[in-house]
Length: 120
Figure 1 (spheres, rainbow, N blue to C red):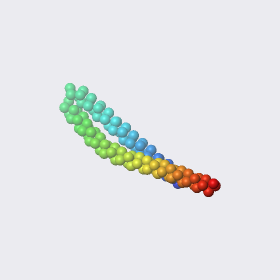
Figure 2 (figure 1 turned 90 degrees about the vertical axis):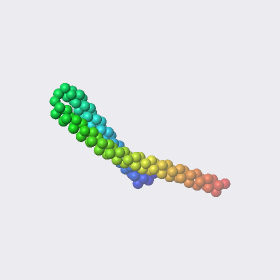
Figure 3 (figure 1 turned 135 degrees about the vertical axis):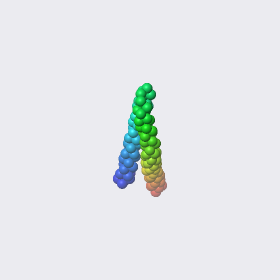
Figure 4 (figure 1 turned 45 degrees about the vertical axis):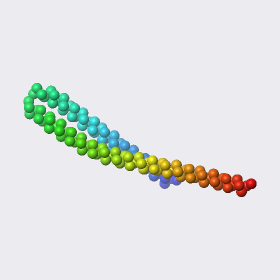
């Protein structure tokens, strides 16, 4: 493999790795937001015996966080699409490398066969 092709594959791999880290960060953010909503839901349950104003504040906060999760899900989908594109690019680069290697092997065998025929 030529140095340029190797660098290209390394660059694709590095980009894919960064996209994967972005995806993990987004998953962690979604989990964190879900835990915050769960804590608020527990507060709401405890607040049922308390003031109506406290329950309204908690309910508004839950709604706001759920809306934020919806927005984060869109970001998650965008990152997933980029990750899928990166995976396809990596696969194509590897498959092209394998095809080139096979072509090189076939060419080497053909040359060797021609040499053997010439040497006879």
